[in-house]
Length: 363
Image (tube, rainbow, N blue to C red):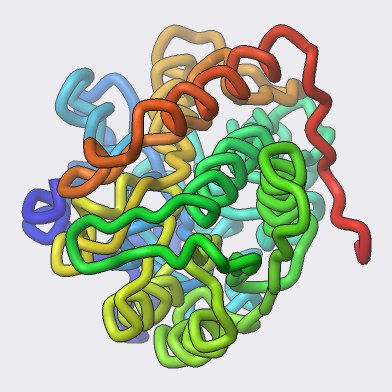
Protein backbone atom coordinates (compact mmCIF):
# COMPACT_ATOMS: atom_id res chain seq x y z
CA UNK A 1 0.00 0.00 0.00
CA UNK A 2 2.87 2.35 0.76
CA UNK A 3 4.13 2.22 -2.82
CA UNK A 4 0.61 2.81 -4.12
CA UNK A 5 0.30 5.88 -1.92
CA UNK A 6 3.58 7.24 -3.21
CA UNK A 7 2.37 6.72 -6.77
CA UNK A 8 -0.92 8.48 -6.12
CA UNK A 9 0.33 11.53 -4.18
CA UNK A 10 -0.44 14.50 -6.36
CA UNK A 11 -1.01 17.48 -4.11
CA UNK A 12 -3.50 19.68 -5.81
CA UNK A 13 -3.06 22.81 -3.75
CA UNK A 14 0.39 22.54 -2.30
CA UNK A 15 2.01 25.53 -3.93
CA UNK A 16 1.36 29.24 -3.92
CA UNK A 17 1.27 29.11 -7.70
CA UNK A 18 -1.67 26.75 -7.53
CA UNK A 19 -3.56 29.20 -5.35
CA UNK A 20 -2.97 32.48 -7.15
CA UNK A 21 -5.59 31.87 -9.82
CA UNK A 22 -8.26 31.25 -7.21
CA UNK A 23 -8.67 34.74 -5.90
CA UNK A 24 -12.03 36.01 -7.07
CA UNK A 25 -12.66 32.88 -9.17
CA UNK A 26 -15.29 30.20 -8.94
CA UNK A 27 -12.95 27.23 -9.31
CA UNK A 28 -11.86 24.98 -6.44
CA UNK A 29 -8.41 24.69 -4.88
CA UNK A 30 -7.13 22.24 -7.48
CA UNK A 31 -5.37 23.30 -10.63
CA UNK A 32 -5.55 21.51 -13.98
CA UNK A 33 -3.62 18.42 -12.80
CA UNK A 34 -4.70 15.45 -10.73
CA UNK A 35 -7.95 13.47 -10.76
CA UNK A 36 -10.51 16.24 -10.87
CA UNK A 37 -12.35 16.43 -14.18
CA UNK A 38 -14.61 19.32 -13.25
CA UNK A 39 -17.23 16.99 -11.82
CA UNK A 40 -18.47 15.88 -15.27
CA UNK A 41 -19.75 12.31 -15.63
CA UNK A 42 -18.77 11.31 -12.10
CA UNK A 43 -21.08 10.36 -9.22
CA UNK A 44 -19.46 12.90 -6.89
CA UNK A 45 -16.64 15.42 -6.68
CA UNK A 46 -14.86 15.63 -3.33
CA UNK A 47 -12.49 18.20 -1.90
CA UNK A 48 -10.32 17.11 1.01
CA UNK A 49 -8.37 19.33 3.41
CA UNK A 50 -5.68 17.38 5.24
CA UNK A 51 -4.50 17.94 8.79
CA UNK A 52 -1.17 19.09 10.20
CA UNK A 53 1.85 17.20 8.89
CA UNK A 54 0.23 16.54 5.52
CA UNK A 55 0.57 13.50 3.33
CA UNK A 56 3.53 11.20 3.66
CA UNK A 57 3.03 10.69 7.40
CA UNK A 58 2.28 6.97 6.86
CA UNK A 59 -0.32 7.49 9.55
CA UNK A 60 -3.35 9.77 10.01
CA UNK A 61 -3.46 11.77 6.77
CA UNK A 62 -2.41 8.84 4.63
CA UNK A 63 -5.22 6.79 6.20
CA UNK A 64 -7.70 9.46 5.10
CA UNK A 65 -6.27 9.37 1.59
CA UNK A 66 -6.71 5.60 1.45
CA UNK A 67 -10.44 6.05 1.98
CA UNK A 68 -10.55 8.61 -0.83
CA UNK A 69 -8.64 6.33 -3.19
CA UNK A 70 -10.96 3.43 -2.35
CA UNK A 71 -13.97 5.61 -3.19
CA UNK A 72 -12.37 6.64 -6.47
CA UNK A 73 -11.63 3.04 -7.42
CA UNK A 74 -15.07 1.74 -6.49
CA UNK A 75 -17.32 4.63 -7.49
CA UNK A 76 -15.30 6.61 -10.03
CA UNK A 77 -15.41 9.87 -8.06
CA UNK A 78 -13.27 12.90 -8.83
CA UNK A 79 -11.35 14.62 -6.05
CA UNK A 80 -8.97 17.44 -5.22
CA UNK A 81 -6.55 17.46 -2.30
CA UNK A 82 -5.28 20.37 -0.21
CA UNK A 83 -2.40 20.36 2.21
CA UNK A 84 -2.42 23.56 4.30
CA UNK A 85 0.90 24.71 5.64
CA UNK A 86 -0.58 25.78 8.96
CA UNK A 87 -3.78 25.84 10.99
CA UNK A 88 -4.48 29.39 9.86
CA UNK A 89 -5.15 28.13 6.34
CA UNK A 90 -7.85 25.59 7.19
CA UNK A 91 -10.73 28.05 6.96
CA UNK A 92 -9.52 29.42 3.64
CA UNK A 93 -9.30 26.00 2.01
CA UNK A 94 -12.71 25.01 3.34
CA UNK A 95 -14.21 28.20 1.90
CA UNK A 96 -12.54 27.73 -1.47
CA UNK A 97 -14.07 24.30 -1.92
CA UNK A 98 -17.48 25.38 -0.62
CA UNK A 99 -17.68 28.46 -2.85
CA UNK A 100 -16.45 26.70 -5.98
CA UNK A 101 -18.82 26.27 -8.92
CA UNK A 102 -16.32 24.81 -11.38
CA UNK A 103 -16.25 22.15 -10.16
CA UNK A 104 -19.13 22.02 -7.70
CA UNK A 105 -17.96 19.93 -4.75
CA UNK A 106 -20.53 17.45 -3.45
CA UNK A 107 -18.53 16.92 -0.26
CA UNK A 108 -15.76 18.75 1.56
CA UNK A 109 -13.79 16.43 3.85
CA UNK A 110 -12.04 18.12 6.78
CA UNK A 111 -9.42 15.89 8.37
CA UNK A 112 -8.45 16.54 11.98
CA UNK A 113 -9.81 18.13 15.14
CA UNK A 114 -7.81 21.30 14.49
CA UNK A 115 -10.25 22.20 11.70
CA UNK A 116 -13.16 22.42 14.14
CA UNK A 117 -13.17 26.16 14.77
CA UNK A 118 -12.84 27.05 11.10
CA UNK A 119 -15.60 24.65 10.11
CA UNK A 120 -17.90 25.91 12.87
CA UNK A 121 -17.66 29.33 11.19
CA UNK A 122 -17.83 28.14 7.59
CA UNK A 123 -20.58 25.51 7.73
CA UNK A 124 -23.39 28.01 8.53
CA UNK A 125 -22.10 30.30 5.77
CA UNK A 126 -22.52 27.51 3.21
CA UNK A 127 -25.69 25.70 4.33
CA UNK A 128 -26.09 23.85 1.01
CA UNK A 129 -22.56 22.42 1.13
CA UNK A 130 -22.04 18.91 2.55
CA UNK A 131 -19.09 18.69 4.93
CA UNK A 132 -17.58 15.85 6.91
CA UNK A 133 -15.21 16.24 9.85
CA UNK A 134 -12.87 13.69 11.39
CA UNK A 135 -11.96 13.69 15.10
CA UNK A 136 -14.33 16.37 16.32
CA UNK A 137 -17.95 17.51 16.25
CA UNK A 138 -19.54 20.56 14.62
CA UNK A 139 -23.25 20.66 15.36
CA UNK A 140 -24.55 21.92 12.04
CA UNK A 141 -27.13 20.26 9.78
CA UNK A 142 -24.68 20.02 6.88
CA UNK A 143 -21.76 18.48 8.84
CA UNK A 144 -21.31 14.75 9.40
CA UNK A 145 -18.93 14.42 12.35
CA UNK A 146 -16.88 11.24 12.67
CA UNK A 147 -15.23 10.58 16.01
CA UNK A 148 -13.29 7.55 17.18
CA UNK A 149 -13.02 5.75 20.49
CA UNK A 150 -9.24 5.96 20.46
CA UNK A 151 -9.20 5.24 24.17
CA UNK A 152 -10.67 1.78 23.57
CA UNK A 153 -8.01 0.75 21.06
CA UNK A 154 -5.30 2.34 23.16
CA UNK A 155 -6.45 0.31 26.17
CA UNK A 156 -5.53 -2.82 24.22
CA UNK A 157 -2.11 -1.31 23.48
CA UNK A 158 -1.68 -0.79 27.21
CA UNK A 159 -2.58 -4.39 28.01
CA UNK A 160 -0.14 -5.62 25.37
CA UNK A 161 2.72 -3.40 26.53
CA UNK A 162 2.19 -4.08 30.25
CA UNK A 163 2.07 -7.83 29.84
CA UNK A 164 5.14 -7.84 27.61
CA UNK A 165 7.23 -5.67 29.91
CA UNK A 166 6.74 -8.28 32.64
CA UNK A 167 7.87 -11.04 30.28
CA UNK A 168 11.31 -11.97 29.03
CA UNK A 169 10.70 -11.56 25.33
CA UNK A 170 12.79 -10.97 22.23
CA UNK A 171 11.85 -10.73 18.57
CA UNK A 172 13.28 -9.04 15.53
CA UNK A 173 15.48 -6.18 16.64
CA UNK A 174 14.11 -5.77 20.17
CA UNK A 175 13.91 -7.38 23.57
CA UNK A 176 12.38 -6.70 26.97
CA UNK A 177 13.79 -6.59 30.47
CA UNK A 178 11.33 -8.46 32.75
CA UNK A 179 12.55 -6.35 35.67
CA UNK A 180 11.41 -3.17 33.90
CA UNK A 181 8.57 -1.23 35.45
CA UNK A 182 8.35 1.55 32.84
CA UNK A 183 6.58 2.14 29.55
CA UNK A 184 6.34 5.28 27.42
CA UNK A 185 3.79 7.34 25.53
CA UNK A 186 4.76 10.01 22.98
CA UNK A 187 2.03 12.38 21.80
CA UNK A 188 2.08 14.91 18.99
CA UNK A 189 0.06 18.02 19.82
CA UNK A 190 -1.42 18.10 23.32
CA UNK A 191 -5.15 17.99 22.64
CA UNK A 192 -8.29 16.20 23.83
CA UNK A 193 -7.98 13.65 21.01
CA UNK A 194 -4.39 12.68 21.84
CA UNK A 195 -5.22 12.73 25.54
CA UNK A 196 -7.77 10.00 24.78
CA UNK A 197 -4.97 7.87 23.37
CA UNK A 198 -2.92 8.46 26.50
CA UNK A 199 -5.83 7.85 28.87
CA UNK A 200 -6.74 4.55 27.27
CA UNK A 201 -3.13 3.38 27.18
CA UNK A 202 -2.56 4.19 30.85
CA UNK A 203 -5.82 2.49 31.83
CA UNK A 204 -4.85 -0.64 29.90
CA UNK A 205 -1.49 -0.74 31.62
CA UNK A 206 -3.10 -0.37 35.05
CA UNK A 207 -5.61 -3.11 34.20
CA UNK A 208 -2.93 -5.58 33.14
CA UNK A 209 -0.13 -4.99 35.63
CA UNK A 210 0.56 -3.57 39.06
CA UNK A 211 3.38 -1.13 39.60
CA UNK A 212 4.15 -0.38 35.94
CA UNK A 213 4.51 3.34 35.29
CA UNK A 214 3.89 5.23 32.05
CA UNK A 215 6.14 8.16 31.22
CA UNK A 216 4.54 10.65 28.80
CA UNK A 217 5.87 13.36 26.53
CA UNK A 218 4.16 15.70 24.07
CA UNK A 219 6.45 16.87 21.27
CA UNK A 220 4.09 19.63 20.10
CA UNK A 221 4.10 18.60 16.44
CA UNK A 222 2.95 15.83 14.14
CA UNK A 223 5.93 16.36 11.85
CA UNK A 224 9.00 16.35 14.10
CA UNK A 225 10.75 12.95 13.96
CA UNK A 226 13.84 14.30 15.73
CA UNK A 227 11.65 15.45 18.63
CA UNK A 228 9.96 12.07 18.73
CA UNK A 229 13.33 10.32 18.75
CA UNK A 230 14.63 12.49 21.56
CA UNK A 231 11.54 11.89 23.70
CA UNK A 232 11.57 8.14 23.12
CA UNK A 233 15.31 7.79 23.71
CA UNK A 234 14.88 9.36 27.12
CA UNK A 235 12.17 6.81 27.92
CA UNK A 236 14.14 3.81 26.71
CA UNK A 237 17.27 4.95 28.52
CA UNK A 238 15.20 5.24 31.72
CA UNK A 239 14.12 1.61 31.40
CA UNK A 240 11.06 1.57 29.18
CA UNK A 241 10.70 -1.61 27.10
CA UNK A 242 7.85 -0.37 24.91
CA UNK A 243 6.84 3.12 23.74
CA UNK A 244 3.44 3.84 22.19
CA UNK A 245 3.09 6.93 20.01
CA UNK A 246 0.14 8.97 18.75
CA UNK A 247 2.06 11.63 16.88
CA UNK A 248 1.82 11.22 13.11
CA UNK A 249 5.15 11.51 11.32
CA UNK A 250 6.80 12.42 14.62
CA UNK A 251 6.46 8.73 15.46
CA UNK A 252 9.17 7.83 12.95
CA UNK A 253 11.60 9.15 15.53
CA UNK A 254 10.11 6.81 18.13
CA UNK A 255 10.79 3.87 15.81
CA UNK A 256 14.34 5.07 15.23
CA UNK A 257 14.91 5.23 18.97
CA UNK A 258 13.46 1.74 19.46
CA UNK A 259 15.91 0.32 16.93
CA UNK A 260 18.81 2.22 18.45
CA UNK A 261 18.03 0.96 21.95
CA UNK A 262 16.90 -2.53 20.76
CA UNK A 263 13.48 -2.13 22.35
CA UNK A 264 9.93 -2.08 20.97
CA UNK A 265 7.40 0.45 19.74
CA UNK A 266 3.67 0.56 19.03
CA UNK A 267 2.36 2.35 15.95
CA UNK A 268 -0.85 4.25 15.28
CA UNK A 269 -3.60 4.93 12.71
CA UNK A 270 -2.27 2.55 10.02
CA UNK A 271 -0.40 -0.74 10.37
CA UNK A 272 2.94 1.00 10.62
CA UNK A 273 4.91 -2.23 10.39
CA UNK A 274 3.80 -2.10 6.74
CA UNK A 275 3.80 1.65 6.07
CA UNK A 276 7.19 2.02 7.81
CA UNK A 277 8.77 -1.32 6.79
CA UNK A 278 12.31 -0.31 7.72
CA UNK A 279 11.18 -0.39 11.35
CA UNK A 280 9.07 -3.53 11.18
CA UNK A 281 11.61 -5.43 13.31
CA UNK A 282 10.67 -3.32 16.37
CA UNK A 283 6.97 -2.54 15.75
CA UNK A 284 5.00 -5.05 17.81
CA UNK A 285 1.54 -3.78 16.85
CA UNK A 286 -0.37 -0.70 15.76
CA UNK A 287 -3.58 0.84 17.04
CA UNK A 288 -5.26 1.11 13.65
CA UNK A 289 -7.80 3.92 13.48
CA UNK A 290 -10.07 3.54 10.47
CA UNK A 291 -10.01 7.10 9.23
CA UNK A 292 -10.18 5.55 5.77
CA UNK A 293 -13.55 4.04 6.67
CA UNK A 294 -14.91 7.40 7.80
CA UNK A 295 -13.85 9.11 4.56
CA UNK A 296 -15.05 6.27 2.35
CA UNK A 297 -18.43 5.97 4.07
CA UNK A 298 -19.05 9.71 3.97
CA UNK A 299 -18.41 9.75 0.22
CA UNK A 300 -20.65 6.71 -0.27
CA UNK A 301 -23.44 8.36 1.72
CA UNK A 302 -23.27 11.50 -0.39
CA UNK A 303 -23.47 9.44 -3.59
CA UNK A 304 -26.54 7.65 -2.20
CA UNK A 305 -28.15 10.94 -1.18
CA UNK A 306 -27.85 9.98 2.49
CA UNK A 307 -25.35 12.48 3.85
CA UNK A 308 -25.44 12.23 7.65
CA UNK A 309 -25.39 15.97 8.29
CA UNK A 310 -26.13 16.92 11.86
CA UNK A 311 -25.02 13.53 13.17
CA UNK A 312 -22.04 12.45 15.25
CA UNK A 313 -20.85 8.98 14.24
CA UNK A 314 -18.66 7.19 16.79
CA UNK A 315 -16.43 4.32 15.64
CA UNK A 316 -15.00 2.02 18.29
CA UNK A 317 -13.99 -1.59 18.88
CA UNK A 318 -17.44 -3.00 18.24
CA UNK A 319 -17.54 -1.58 14.71
CA UNK A 320 -13.82 -2.22 14.11
CA UNK A 321 -13.37 1.54 13.92
CA UNK A 322 -10.27 1.00 16.06
CA UNK A 323 -8.27 -2.22 16.20
CA UNK A 324 -5.13 -3.79 17.61
CA UNK A 325 -3.21 -5.07 14.58
CA UNK A 326 -0.07 -7.07 15.29
CA UNK A 327 3.10 -6.26 13.41
CA UNK A 328 3.71 -7.85 10.03
CA UNK A 329 7.23 -9.08 10.91
CA UNK A 330 7.24 -9.82 14.64
CA UNK A 331 3.59 -9.73 15.71
CA UNK A 332 3.21 -13.49 15.36
CA UNK A 333 5.88 -13.96 18.01
CA UNK A 334 3.87 -12.29 20.78
CA UNK A 335 3.14 -15.07 23.32
CA UNK A 336 -0.29 -16.66 23.00
CA UNK A 337 -1.27 -15.86 26.57
CA UNK A 338 -0.67 -12.15 25.94
CA UNK A 339 -2.65 -12.23 22.69
CA UNK A 340 -5.46 -13.88 24.65
CA UNK A 341 -5.29 -11.19 27.35
CA UNK A 342 -5.63 -8.48 24.69
CA UNK A 343 -8.54 -10.31 23.05
CA UNK A 344 -10.27 -10.79 26.41
CA UNK A 345 -9.92 -7.08 27.15
CA UNK A 346 -11.47 -6.25 23.77
CA UNK A 347 -14.44 -8.51 24.48
CA UNK A 348 -14.89 -7.03 27.94
CA UNK A 349 -14.90 -3.46 26.61
CA UNK A 350 -17.48 -4.32 23.95
CA UNK A 351 -19.63 -6.10 26.55
CA UNK A 352 -19.50 -3.05 28.81
CA UNK A 353 -17.59 -4.84 31.55
CA UNK A 354 -14.66 -2.43 31.24
CA UNK A 355 -15.30 1.30 31.15
CA UNK A 356 -12.31 2.98 29.51
CA UNK A 357 -11.63 6.58 30.59
CA UNK A 358 -11.38 9.31 28.00
CA UNK A 359 -9.35 11.73 30.10
CA UNK A 360 -5.99 11.45 31.81
CA UNK A 361 -5.50 12.14 35.47
CA UNK A 362 -3.73 15.43 34.64
CA UNK A 363 -6.19 16.56 31.96
